[in-house]
Amino acid sequence: MALALRLSSETVIDHHAAVALVEKMHEDHSASGPDSVSAGSWDFPLHYGSVSAKLQGSRIHLRVFADDDTNLSYVKMEVAAHASEILGSTSGICWSGQDNMPSLPVFFRQIAVVSSHRISPHMQRIRFQADNLDRYASGGIHIRLLIPSAGRKPVWPAIGPDGLIVWPTGDDALTVRIYTIRSIDVAAGTLDVDFVLHPGVDTPAANFAQSAVRGQVIGMLGPGGGDAPDCGNLLLLGDDTAIPAISRIIENMPTTTSARVFLEVDTQADILPLAAPNASITWCFRNGRPAGTAGLLTEALKGIDGTTLPSDLFVWAGCEFTDFREIRKIVRKDWCLPKDRQLIVAYWRRGVNGGDRTSSDD
Image 1 (tube, rainbow, N blue to C red):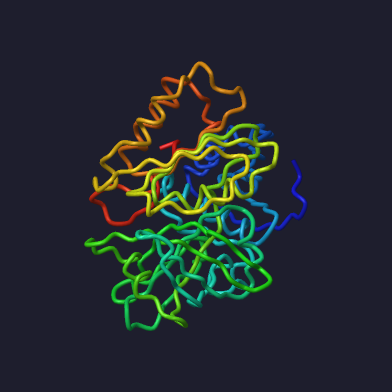
Image 2 (cartoon, helix red, strand yellow):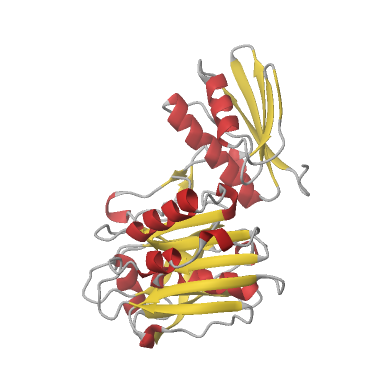
């Protein structure tokens, strides 16, 4: 399907495995939409845009398309990531227009703390100010926050000629964590992010949240992913870390959608007000048990009769890795719910500090 606005960039891949690279990308995105493939020619969609590739002698001439500059950058990164995996290197990949691109990624913003306050015993809300937030109001609810070392002047990532992010290293290395935009006001140039606090545990992002002061600067990349599709029925499950995402989902879901929500927190003091006229919300309490050990979300899911599920049900879950595995098993194997009707994510893993989230397709 043609995109409303066709931004494009191109490169040439001169490698004996160039055809294998294109075919692997096509295979990995076979469920993304209609394609057109013939001898030496490929046209197919990616998540953020599309690819057109043609074999010319021993080389692949590859062109990517997207509907805005952020998605175009994402598509180039995806191609380069596949090249790194299949070819073992991105050497030789240089996208047209790259020389005219800013050194900073187009999807980067520098953000400054406006205010910070505790909204529950285990949650701190920080309001940030930034320029040009329009793009962050759509295209996903997740962002990556880039936290510099205390007392150091920030050195931000750049985009290399292959389209991949070049990260600062050594003393300039950044702490990178995935968070949810809890709310955003494009006109005012502000966004709110809720941070789960971990008393007694040394975690860089939570430490930043607890000590953040007005004017303090960090970085932000995004947006992307995390939201739920429009459908008639949602089943949402999450622990403390997923409350911001679930809150966004139920606040923005159509009036024709109904949601059943299970949220695991420590005690009743951690309950937050949620605007959810079409949602049935059940709070599950650990009552002092360590987060990630209570299994309350898995227990809630096991209490649902899989034979009575609505035909249009979409399951969304964000939680600790152990619950993630159990929830995924129930949804996939016991309920036999198709992959396109679920998004199950490990937001964190007990005993592991940081790292990216694990999707239901891993």
